[in-house]
Image (tube, rainbow, N blue to C red):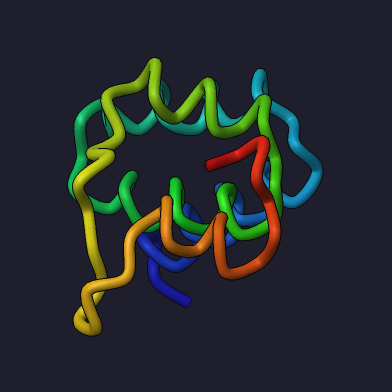
Length: 87
């Protein structure tokens, strides 16, 4: 397992728990503020409706215009999974 996979796993787990403090600790500790991958994690938090994680990711400069290869965004994930508070 690479270091990047470890970080991805830690961030995903923090989002699933909606643990904004742990999420920020991972982002700050690894100097990921504004990192392009934060948009993907924003999409995961949107899909799951994890509002505290969404707020923290946005505070860490996650790109709200991020989209995957199919053009799906955090907003579209929130809508598709009926997470209207997240949208």
